[in-house]
Length: 146
Image (tube, rainbow, N blue to C red; front, top):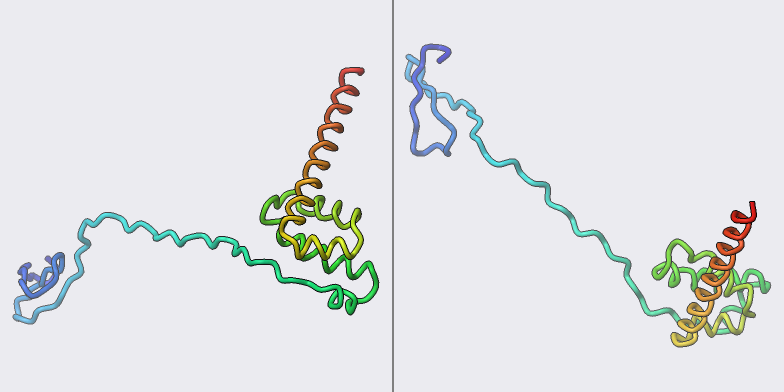
């Protein structure tokens, strides 16, 4: 041992903490690395998106927004937040189709009426899937014709 001391285990010291007794009689703690299993990091739970009930929107509120384009933008954003939870990758396309097809009154109904919302989004998804399928078929036909 450095300093010519002796190692003396003191029962009052925590395990793995030997005391070094130098010749002069003064005790000094010396840190000893005990073999302990590695500490595994604690995984924090991932936050889940909170699904809140849609807030009702009235035609009076929408009428105060401005022109029809701004009104559709406002309603489209409300619809987008809900569609994004269902289909994040295609939410923009789905909502774009809905906003293009419906007038402001129908968009208010989509926002406020859960059943109408489900039907509308389902129809838009079906239309999008059919369009993608037709595009794939056309691409295959063009590739086989070459």
